[in-house]
Amino acid sequence: MLQAVFRLTAALAVTTPLVVSAAAAAEFTVEPVTVTEMKAVFGRVESRIVVPARARIGGVVEDVRVGEGDNVSKGDTIAVIVDDKIALELKAADARLEALNSQLANARTELDRAQQLRTSGSGTQARLDQATMQFDVATNQVAAAIAEKAVVEQRAKEGEVLAPATGRVLTVPVTLGSVVMAGENVARIAPGPYYLRLSLPERHAAEIVEGAEVQVGERGLVPGQEELPAVSTGRISKVYPEIADGRVIADVEVENVGDYFVNERTLVSIPVGKRAALVVPPEAVKTVHGVDYVRIATADGEMDVAVVLGEIVRDNDEERIEVLSGLRAGDRVILP
Image 1 (tube, rainbow, N blue to C red):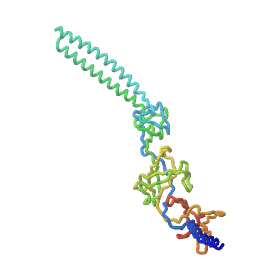
Image 2 (cartoon, helix red, strand yellow):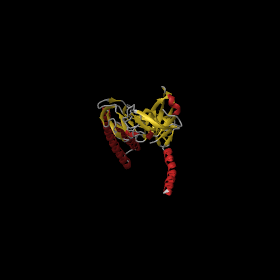
Image 3 (cartoon, helix red, strand yellow):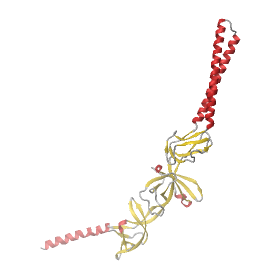
């Protein structure tokens, strides 16, 4: 009987330190950690290149084949401009070419006759030379008329306004029946690449660096939200060296931003510095009647302390909650 009691007492003596060790493992020591300070700003989607599609001739807009937001390929016809004077010039060129062809036929007949007469000995060399010269002149006149007609035909073809690049149509400032001049904009096309342009207060200029990672919120995000839901990531590709109106400008590269509307705005969370913060695991916080508490271990035992919480941060890839007040460095937080 005494041996059994001794074994039971020894077993309790061995197991008791294990319970203390388990309780110690459930503590979290509060220490300052370095967190990245993020600032939410609006970024505007822009195309790095915007190409105007210009009218090559002046005239009346007879057809508009695209609208704002349409996708076009390079060389597509986006509008047709007609100049009535070109049609008249083309008819005049045809008439002149027909007349010159008749003169060329007569010159050829005269040349053949002069050659026959010269061969038979009844014609002179001077007449043959004159007929040859007239034939050459008529031939050159026909060639010149053909070239002039080709110029008019080319001008008529230039009534088609072609897309200068593959991309999205941003604006079409002309309508059917409007009169345009040569060189006037008929459409503006954004071929990309697309990026987000940010404008931040100049006090953050020193903290904005190229290559820094940013978070981009979902489309339709409204200001006042504390977090960016379902974020994607981007990278600061360029920081402009000039500060204008107290703002520093930066560009952010983001995948699939080309699906957005040009000039559409979306929230972007950008790193603007680092700071020290006291953090605790989320499970250490309990809320009672709207007040947040954290249980800490003291020399007099465990006690609940009211805390003011900040934002959620990450420390070594683990989620933590920043504590703004109520705790000090070195406090031992009891975890549930």
